[in-house]
Length: 298
Ligand SMILES: NC(=O)C1=CN([C@@H]2O[C@H](COP(=O)(O)OP(=O)(O)OC[C@H]3O[C@@H](n4cnc5c(N)ncnc54)[C@H](OP(=O)(O)O)[C@@H]3O)[C@@H](O)[C@H]2O)C=CC1
Ligand SMILES: Nc1nc(=O)c2c([nH]1)NC[C@@H]1CN(c3ccc(C(=O)N[C@@H](CCC(=O)O)C(=O)O)cc3)C=[N+]21
Image (cartoon, rainbow, N blue to C red; front, side):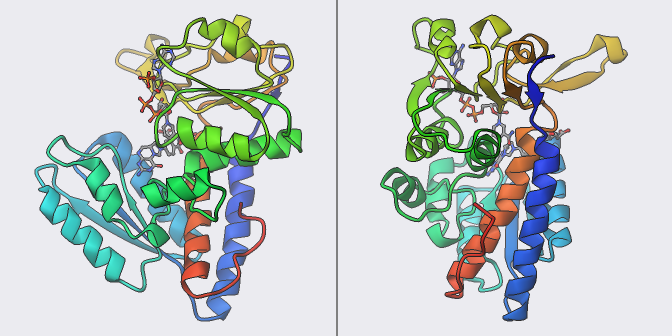
């Protein structure tokens, strides 16, 4: 491998340390940031994430509130819980784990969250604030990607960035953040003609597609920085019958041979997502109490 490995896990650990310091500062002022995570249903992957969010929240000195609802839960019940959390002064951040069961309209649930507590940054008010250059709570996954890119490359202005994927939770906010950094941004998706040729122009590639190992090394401009957001569980017969492993949207070995730097999966964007969630909770708590937003979190 010629490209440098971007250590998301290590970077996330450093960010959590900064979050811990900020929490100590707020605690001295009598403020303990609180994060509420709502999980509907029993999806095993979601349970793993929710557990590690809760653990890391407590480790950073914050309060963690976990709410579990059965997958038969109605939209009315979920909205009632969101209203209760909106009204609870000890809760500064609210995250409703996605995806939600089919009987629930996810957009309606996201819009019910108080934008000031929307630490996922999914509420249209936060999306609009980000798009119009105002203070916003920024979605955790793209924020984590941006922090790693800035650390790797310094000033991003003028760089060609290609984001593959246009979801509201990753692709679109990632494009907004890169635009805010004065990159020249292209957003590619399933209707893009000549995806390999488009990606080949990029100094920065962010892959958020959900297709295991789709991006191969022959798509990558030599020296480009590759951020792999994909989390795909695939069969791993070499590890034994029925075994699986996590892979990204990039074919790691061929991309790493050409890239200047690349994030691994696991150990790249994933850990940064959770660290940014903690950081957003501190930001929300500071703002809720009229305190200055601590340095080093965004
Ligand atoms: N590391 C982390 O913390 C997180 C990781 N993820 C992972 O990131 C990936 C993307 O997630 P998410 O944004 O929610 O996914 P979505 O399914 O919502 O969006 C996928 C996007 O990829 C595009 N796409 C699909 N197939 C192709 C193709 N063949 N060529 C080009 N574009 C394509 C789609 O295009 P179109 O719009 O045209 O359909 C869509 O815009 C997943 O693997 C997910 O698990 C997600 C969140 C957090
Ligand atoms: N409201 C909401 N907000 C989210 O931010 C949200 C969500 N719903 N639904 C699901 C996706 C996915 N997501 C991940 C978080 C951490 C890892 C992570 O830490 N991954 C580890 C590996 C974990 C493992 O081994 O399974 C890694 O990449 O190293 C992955 C994925 C947040 N999401």
